[in-house]
Length: 459
Image (cartoon, rainbow, N blue to C red; front, side, top):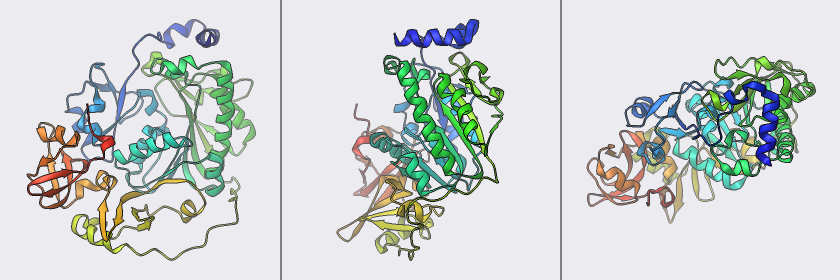
């Protein structure tokens, strides 16, 4: 019944174009990866690592995976955050935002983290990325993926969009809303999406998307840009959603996406609203991806300032002193971090992004991770964390250098102790071809493995 509703609706809307745009559901789903711009040399490494790749039309950093037998998720480069596995069309919305280093960017529906990783690459470690996910379990996955990708300047939240808008109104230069949707573009990839699909779900997702868009509009600064996207084809969630939003927000204009891939939006999907669908963009399964819808919205520079909810701004507190044990550790292993903003909270030490506002930490937001977790203070000593080495491991003063051909690489990823050949005594970063895998501690010519158990290749 669910599939009958979908196919009958799409055939009615598309007519004779249906067969060309919607490939058979039994066909293999498109697979791809996006290269991590935060890893110097990542592009050349990916192209030379043996994966069967083809260019992606949707994103300059994207590639299509052409060999269904290959398992790139088990490759050491994936573990090192050299690339993110991402369905090809899913990489299309982020470049439309025009993010530049130094921007303040909000990814309002960020899990599992593919688009946030792209945003972080565009920021190049400058400015601030706030990545939010309402579901706690998915927020934990988001946090883990941003750690793996070596993102230094992210604030990961587990919040409602409305609460973020109240705490940080008009704060962001760019906002991405990859809205929770009915998932019609996931039918080939996730059979569960097909099984649970029905008209009621579409209506529910359209209402939720409208609420999220309202919060996103409040978060965006005057003169800023918002990109709304979904991985569904439902009119109420796509063209109709944008038409409705524009009818309520004269301070926003619909910009041309400026993309050559895919197709323009569809006039007969506006649900009675008025909007220039030629400025919207669709990717259909028959165009090389599983499906995506995108629209770019610009907020007028003359839009009124958004008001902050609550009792006003938090009091400005004196800067916290750098924990001495961290300072001692950094001086030995990471001297380049000696001047970075460090904060101790609950026995843990965080390296905070310079652009992180006080409101983000003092505004009652549920914070999953602020900046980089450097490590913890315990029994008069500093214990480093995996996150520290995934971000700055390549610059550690003590490094164990591995290669793809080195049998110790697979051993380290299994959680085993390995022979130390380039690192001296003490803590060391473990790298594969210069990309961080984690860290260990050298003693007696051996690297004791500190790779978290949850990240090990145990099969």
